[in-house]
Length: 337
Image (cartoon, rainbow, N blue to C red; front, side, top):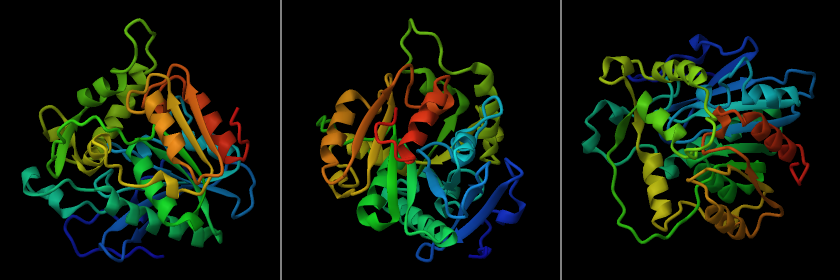
């Protein structure tokens, strides 16, 4: 579908002028016909010869940063999508509105945060994800594709897999969010919040045991951090520099931990692999056990815990093992070893 610019001062730039992270990368913007927002997709062809349709995977990002800083970000010259491409996968990434510079943002982001409910809730995001998936399957001439979903993205991907099972081949849930029932009062968040580099750093290192060697390279984080600030043109004018971020994903996670997960895992009928680091406080053994039991209609369920990893393992020293396990499962090696 061709790009159609929106008549809005907040509209993002056309896909044709978005900087490429790789010379082979292609960019697309597709419109959500209900919400009127244009969604940005980045696509990387396989590194080696593969059939035009081949294996196709879409990455569904979490609640604080877009595809350029997750599946496509290169550490020492290599990204997760590079690893997938080396194994013959066509790799796509979607940026939800409010994440990165290239999908149309919510207009409410320009207003005070306390004037609106949290932006980017899962019930809206799943519609965006469905739009993206239907665009991708049509482009490749397929019936279904696989999904890799991180953190809050697992809620959106799980909801889509339950609602449109015909679209999803295999599902990798990396650090997924599960339902908890702690009985605590649920805070209600504003439309958006600011996240600084210090906030991200502290979040990235919080779960590493005090006696353990670091798993996040400070030099890598410095490069990643500059790219993170680049996702918001106003970030460096704030003190401290910070990125404006929709609060909908945080509210979805809070609600899930209060007992109200936004989708029913029992509706998923695709094979599912849960990948998580051993130090992931957002996806604990108890969370993974609940999720595995709740995926009662999935023909295959795998819970794979990886050593020396946290909730952000795709940015850490153990990322190569995460890449390998995810690729093995997507290729049909059901033990993912």
